[in-house]
Length: 178
Image (cartoon, rainbow, N blue to C red; front, side, top):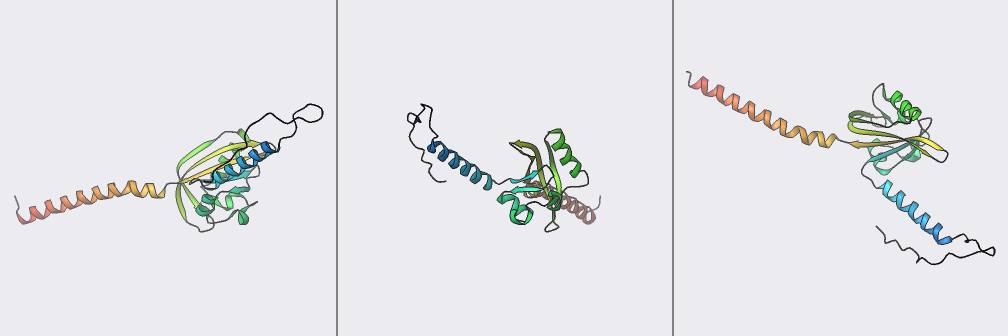
């Protein structure tokens, strides 16, 4: 991360009428903060999809582009359901979240990536957003496939150990009947 250098604070410059003059340094700070926010959003591990009120893709961060196997250039303006799917109720849930301005989270949701046809498990959080004239939904996708595989490994190991002990016991009884 680059070092941010903010100009030293001083008394605000005044215009001829004695009012504070437009401060170019505050505009510089604003643009620096906008760039920093964009940088943070683009480099999050969570996939972030922003859709407008018609449920069309407005923004994808880098994680979303990777997860959904598409780019913002290719998918901007496309219906979000042409990029990702999650069962028959998903379109109604998105519409309800937008109209009722109520967020929701689906844990271990099974998603279908339209570009590849592959399924993946993810936690989905949908949050309505209203900024100036923009109204839409912020969709966060946290893939959990890897986590599920990690959690299944100990269970599979335990089943294998139990099966092994059962087979050993049976083999012993066959060899040495009671």
